[in-house]
Structures are given as C-alpha cells and as structure tokens.
Amino acid sequence: MREFFHRKLERKTISLVVAIVAVASIGGFVEIAPLFTIHKTVEEVPDMRTYTPLELAGRDIYIREGCYACHSQMIRTLRDEVERYGPYSLAVESKYDHPMLWGSKRTGPDLARLGDKYSDAWHVAHLINPRDVVPQSVMPKYGWLQRNELDFSKLGLNLAAQRSVGVPYTQEMIDNASKDAYGQATPDTDAASGVSERYGEATNVRVFDGDPARVTEMDALVAYLQILGRLTDAAYKQSASADAPTPVGE
Amino acid sequence: MEPRKRDKVTGRTTTGHIWNGIEELETPIPKVVFAFLAGTFLFAVLCWVLYPAWPFGVSYTKGLLGFDQRNVVTEQVAKAEAARIEDWGGKVEALDYAQIEADPALMQPVREEGRRLFEDNCAACHGVKATGGPGFPDLTAKAWLWGGSSETIAETIRVGINGTAEDTRSSQMLSFGKDQMLDREQILNVVAYVRSLSDLEPAAGDAARIEPGKEIFAQNCASCHDEDAKGNQELGAPNLTDETWIYGSDQQAVYTTVYNGRQGHMPSWGERLTPLQIKILALYVHTLKAPQ
Image (cartoon, rainbow over all chains, first blue to last red; front, side, top):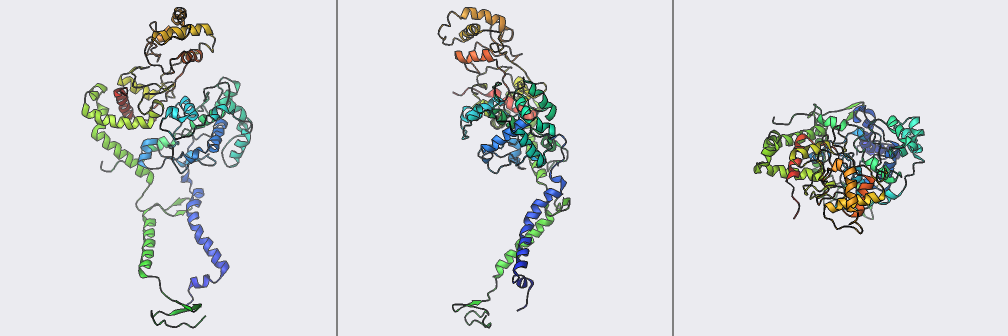
C-alpha cells in the first residue's frame, strides 16, 4: 500500500497533535482575529460617552441580579426587531461594556434602546413590583433595591479596573468616583456640579428613585437603565444615513 | 499483522488486522456519502466566493453579491414603509385629522397600526387597555391635562411632558408642604375643600375644614387650577372637580400631592417615532373608549 501523507502523519504523535491544533484553530482564528485587525469592526464615533460611576454601579447591580439572563441588549439586523425596538445595535455601543451584556435569551424584552423610553417613576414602580404597571409580567420583584443604600466607597477601584481594559477614564474621574456617584443622584448638593463637568452635559443628573434623601441601589440601576442606547447617537444616524439602498422596485 | 488476502464471501481484501479471529475487511466509504461530502465542500467554496467570508489583514473578502445584512434590513424596513405609505399611510400623511376621522375605511388600518404602536411604546405606563394606573393617566377617561383633540395629543406625544425635547411641555406642582408654604392644618383644609369638589366621601373632621380650605385654594392653587378648580390645559394643570385622580383621591394621597408637589414625566417621542407614527398614535388614542 502506498504511503499517503495522512498515513504518515497519523503515525507520528507529536506531528498529529500539532496538525489537529492547527486545523481546529482555523475556525476560531477566522472569527476572532479580524476583530483585532479590521478597524471597521468597531465604528469610529466621536460622541461615544463612558458610563458614569453611578451608571457603572447600576450596571454591576444589573449583573448581580442576573437581569441579563432574561433581557438581551442587542437588537439584531432583522426587520421585526428594528420595527419594535429601534435601530439595530452597533459594535461601538458596547465598546465600553466589560463584560458585554448582549445576552442570548429574551424572556423579557430587549433593553438596548430602553434609555429615555419610560420615566424614572415607571422604572421604580416596575422594579418594586412589575405587576403594578404591567399586569401580565412574569418578572420578579426587586423591592430591596429601594431599601439598600448604594455602597459607592469602592467605585474608584471599579473605574480603575475598567481603565485597565481600555475604558478612557481619567485619573480625575477615578479620584472623584464616589463623589460623582453621590452627586449624580443628588442634584441639590455640591457634589452634583462635577458630574456633568467630567462626564458631559448630556449626563442625567437627577433623583432617580424619587427619594432625594438617600442614594440607593435603585438610583444606580435606574440611572443605568436610562442610559441604555443613549451613550451615542450613532445607531440613529446610521439608520437614517444616505448609504442605505433605496427599496427594490422603485 | 497477517498477510492480506481476499475474503471469499464479499470479494473484498482484508486489511490484515485480526481480533479474536474476526478479520477486518477493507470496505471503502459508500459513494453516496463521499458525493455528499464533496457537495458540501463545493457549497462552502461557492459561499466563500459569493458572500463576505475570509478575513485578511485590515479587510475581508466582500463576496461577489455585495451582501450586507445591515443593508438587507434597512431595505426591508424601507420597503415595508413604502408599501404602507402607498397603501394608506400616504393618505394619513396628507389629510388632516378631521378628514381621517371622518373616513372609516382609512381609520381601520390606522387603528390596527395604532394598537401595535401603542403596545410597543405606550402600554408599559398607560396599560394595554390605556386605563393607566397610579401616576400614569387613564387615556380613556377623557380627562386631558393638555387637551384632547388629536392635534394636541400628537403634540404631547412628540414633545412629551417634562421630557428631553427642547420644546417639551413642562409643568410642575409646587411642594407646598415640603417648601413650607402651607402648614399641616392648611394642607388638611385645602385637601378637604378639593375633595369636596368631586363629592368624595369626606374624611373625619372634613366638614369644618371646607370653608377655610376654599380660602387657601383661592390664594395658592387657583392661579394654575383656575378659580373654579376646573384646571388649565395651557399649563397642564388638571381639573380637580372631575372623577379622575392620577395620583389617587383618598385624603392621604391628596395630602401627599399637596405636600410634595408633583412633576409627572412623559418621555419625548419625537426622536423615537416618525411624524406618521405619531399621527397614527394620536388618532388611535383619540378613538379609545373606556372599557365596559
């Protein structure tokens, strides 16, 4: 019998292992490597904002309570999703998400365009008892968020960790993280002034949970929910841009 | 390894491997399996050529079809929109509200589309049946804060109330108690008076409070809610003499409202919805009737 290439290869253990690893990595390489080399993958958007410390704290609560298990944050390029939720998600919109929270299952609706869609009062009522505002809802209650004071003593470390993976927080932001988190939910205090200075005029500075006396986990989570899809307008511009082809048959 | 030989039954050669007397035959893979495998390989190669496939350096192969899922969805949405415009949406855009409402054939698709838009966007607060809840107005009650014509409803949807639009409707009830404009007795008096206007069951001791409450109302509340307490739609000040109470009508609820003030918030929808969608929604909301 002739000695084919494969017959030779499978008799040399090390060579066979190396060959298996090489072949198996093609799929991963093709999918992952381009994300680092093709710059078009993440759109260039000058108006992209970072999360404020309070929003970041809210994001951690979102992760802690497992919201991502039932809610996605990713509008796919499908007609029914675009018509229901709004413009499809762009890569740049989760540029500062570490880890990303796209999710893969929707027991509840997608939340990628939730920011500014409903009032703070609605979010608070809905989180305390979803059935109060949406009778058919199966979402659990999260009433303790309104009772728990937010622990923002370690937010500086949180920001520093985010910076180490590429989020452009300045040293000033890190130093003032706790103060800014407090200030964003207490617009009448001195701490509030620095927030829009450091994070931009578009930042929501207000009492999110309806209780100005305390900064609660509810404040943080609602602040985060109200910013979803609002960190940049890129998605709205993209869907309205002229490079979209005209409909067939026109 | 035994020497290879030909198997008598099948006519195939053996491989020379024998286990417990069982000889392995050298049977080739069936041709049909081989053909299927080759077919899938060819299919893959064809897809590589036609669709975006292989990355290289800072770019990737775009494929001969120029396919891009983003363009596909943009095209589908635009096509559906164009079909709707041609079908009935164009008429809704061109005609004014009264003309549309006078045309039952046109109102049919408006109601269907309006219901879908309402459920996607408005129902979370106002409820699937638009009957609202504590803090969220009942749209079937016809007790409008800013006016109930289709035009004003459309404008309210577009700019919102205390919303993010630059020209948003804005309205705030002052915190008479918290900001120490009225003391506890005065608030209880004015609450008794206001509740008496709607013929609500008086709370204990309210009978004596109504007269002094009227005085306080005239001095503090009438500038927005009007002398006769029928409200002012220019300011978004509600009518206090009707049966509709957004924040509740019992003594405690009205006391809380006067003590803390109120600043309801309806988001501005002008950025999120198209002018046609807002028009459809306004027409839909205008047709809503209280559930029987």
